Length: 179
Image 1 (spheres, rainbow, N blue to C red):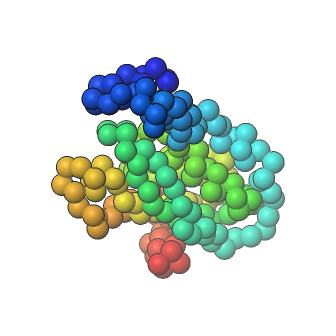
Image 2 (image 1 turned 90 degrees about the vertical axis):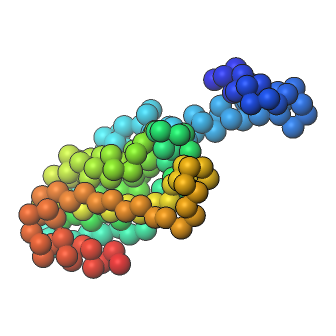
Image 3 (image 1 turned 45 degrees about the vertical axis):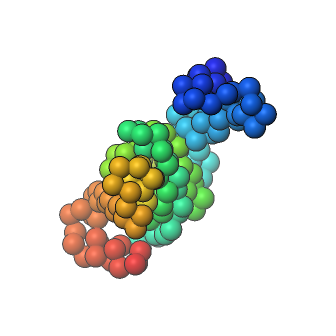
């Protein structure tokens, strides 16, 4: 990967042997591996020992989980926050594990629409709750730094599964709680 970044530096007309760029291919490769580490992570391993039996039956919401991802079309970041809610069905999950699930999927080349659904489906698979709701709000640098260059645009996506999809009252409660 370092060689690819060195070639990229040459292709844009820079000298990869210039003092400030000598170590850039190594740093860029290391950063890119970190930004895409979700490909090497498994949600089952991450959540394995943090699912607990519970009589809880009220909605659980984790709001404003920050996320950083890379747009699969331009390899530019999109940055935002994710809100996750679920209705327990005999099990709850450790709070930090929800944020880790978000990161597993965010740290891949993505489009926000797919990311939202992947998080919701993973929560359904792992917990088998009565329902899950996921809302993501993000700013996309591919839209801000290039193309239309719109600095204040914000993309919102949602995925509602189970009771969050089928019962308007559940959906409304979730959307009210994340406001």
